[in-house]
Image (cartoon, rainbow over all chains, first blue to last red):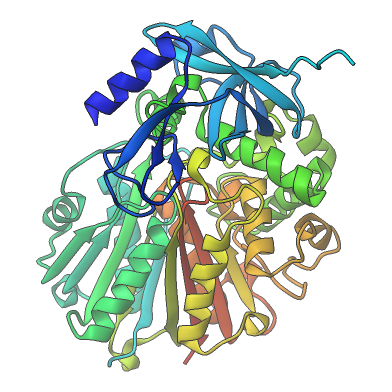
Length: 125
Length: 382
């Protein structure tokens, strides 16, 4: 698992959300594993998410689990259904609606590169 | 196959129990259950415990056996988050039915509130149930995960914050009739709406408190020692661990699957249930479970609470002890308190909360993780 996690972390530092596509059954999974959790086969390809999706959950936290997080209250987390079909958690602005289309960027937080979602810019007509 | 009966119950006062550790709270509840059932320690041949975040231990059941003076032929400490209480009772039923044990003591207790570091320590520990790489680093908490769920569920089904507030008000009104409840001061929906935000849309009064407390049950194969309550059905379902991996954010088939398994085994239908104890860590948890299992139409749990359906004199008395939201939440014992209360109602032993006609059937549901793990129990008077 460590090698898989390290790969994801390196990709995140390069501004990419890596996910696995199963060559046997076609399922995508964003939690990395040595096998596909639907069919069990180990024939997985690394892909990069396009980074766009829809907000399916949003909450502004007013109580934090750690002293470090307490410093930045209030902050928001969102759940986003990415266009590839899986769901991920990310940081977000305080004001984001369920159903909004968003795009992914990365933020350095301590040792990690974390996901952040902001509204997708509308294409000018 | 033997049948499994409840022979005794115990439940400590929940709240701040300064000076008592997890073993003390477990022992207090166990002693009460033994006295309630008229059992001696030497008659206990099975011991099931949960876990304690205030006393993490690799072998909590054997630790308690040594402390309390038991020598079981089967011992086990289960860890299923909030579903642990229900899972312990389900396992006790299986042990008795299979003939492995004759008299099983099920016990849990934790000084989650008065443990040094107390609330903050519990919040930080519990937040770790999120995914280590994909959730925890974002600084969500357990209320945060449930708040995310609430935002999705409410948008999909039209539930309002005022609807959820009705459930909090109801739980507090029930707890007011329980001498051992943590929170008993009456509240209104205005109080709930004005309480400070924890993780939007959940506010302080949408969330259960952190309490010290313990609970215990004795499950026996000896019909002659029954309180008149049989464990008629039990079922589980597990659909995911992390909210990011939940199959859906707007319906939770795990809850209805577990309930269906329990109803099927008992040969009792949902419409026959006379009293229920349903996990209520947050108002949204209770609303989702009521609606998923079918005790309220989708989006209508709050409205039914508002019109009195879940009150002591309503058509479906619910969490008559005040639930996690007001009786209190000390961890595993929090979920077990629902079982204790349903048993007491069916046995005519619920004191100032006693339903006028002791129900013939009862239902309990526990939820672990973020609607991740489900355990349902169906109880029948016999």
